[in-house]
Image (cartoon, rainbow over all chains, first blue to last red; front, side):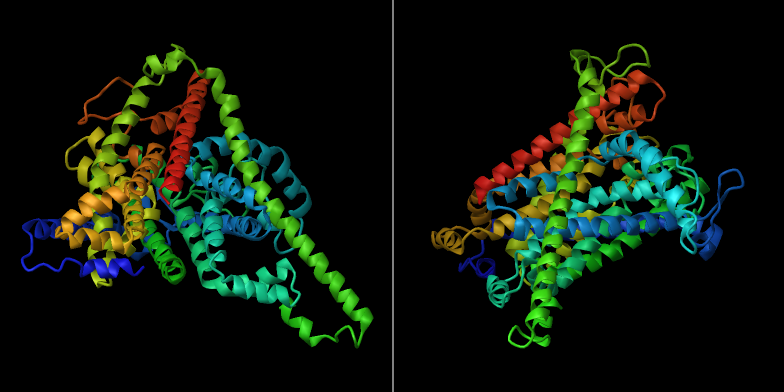
Length: 319
Length: 296
């Protein structure tokens, strides 16, 4: 992008127009406003959560209690749930998203690419609440009737990993939440992968084809190594999205403050706990402060993940 | 891996049988990979189709004029969604109206003033992080700033939360679109003696207007379906209210309250609301894409 560089030094004027000074100050101030906004979010959440951090100390992070009667609150269960559902969601979403990106960049006929790309991207536009309803009314019954009984019958007796498939087939739970999250983050990961796959210089791929490589070998040995950093960045972007997802998870996760080692067990996430418990928290109460402290923790986690994602993606997608 | 193995195994001249086996294996792996990736695409499309089909099949039956002419009523009394629809429109429009100018200014800063500066890179980074930050936290943030100190949930707090979500979307598209404007156009304007701000406002904005409008449309589509930030700010209101200083109904929050209820007619209305909001949001999204295609 050469032009913007020249634009910065553009007006070769003897006297500067007063309009210029006003305009430049306004846009610079808006830039600083955005910086201040992020700072304000962090500070406001930290101050709000201060009471809880003071009351429970570092133990807040590892305590599994959430007892409004005893006024004892801990963050371990929702942090566990947030991380586990998001990582499981990625395990399902990444292969699918890679397949979609592979199909869209190498296999699909030209006329078919744009409509399919658009359709996949539209998955990202569907409101979270609609995913929640779809998950609760469509996916949960399927999980309860077919998927979970199948796993429980066939896999729960396995040594070592059998505990993952223990429990009753309620349909709701960690695996269902992860599945819905996977569908929600597929468009973000697939779109990033598609965009970076398209940045691979044609001459590299043509050279490989010229040596007799198959399409898969070209993707496996040329495209993926060339775009590896950005692909990881896209996956981190999906992770960042999954961590903070609220409404869809609230509908299907079962909302129980207990660490369950079974995939079918109920649980909660930071976002779902905040959404559900918030209406029952008095302003200024220790409970509200604990929720804000959870919000602060979630913000820190997503900030780190998104920062890493951006760091990895920047060299490829930014010109 | 596979590409390099071709050099390390005996070539056709040395071992015909081995090379045939290798060829067959490579062909098979290629076919399987292609088949799986096609399958993945169709699974993705099937998810979209399943969601849309569910919405239509469950929502269309409850769609009637009453939905648009009656406010939310207690279960069993044939209520509608009028207050929720109006509340959503007000909050979405106001949220976009507050967030868009700020986003536009920041995008302008990044593209026209901040080349290579450390501050501008930080602003771009922060804006990108805010773009994907959990919206529920924006709700908590505005709750602490604009609800708790003033002692009550309010429509205007909802607007503010949505405005925060709008800013990074508009920043991103504005910056990208302004960068597409050819340098010759800028030089022509400056050559006529126009100051820089006139070049930006009168020429660059005009040249990039379709792209900028796309960003605003995408932002509107995003915030129209947001539930989590509104739970803590405008809260939702089952009565008719247009005052910005009182709790205000919105379609997503009403859907959330109704979908989880035990009353069949409320659940039915939730599906109608979900149908309306999804197709509204998807229509805006597709319109934005068509506009962008025209712009490029």
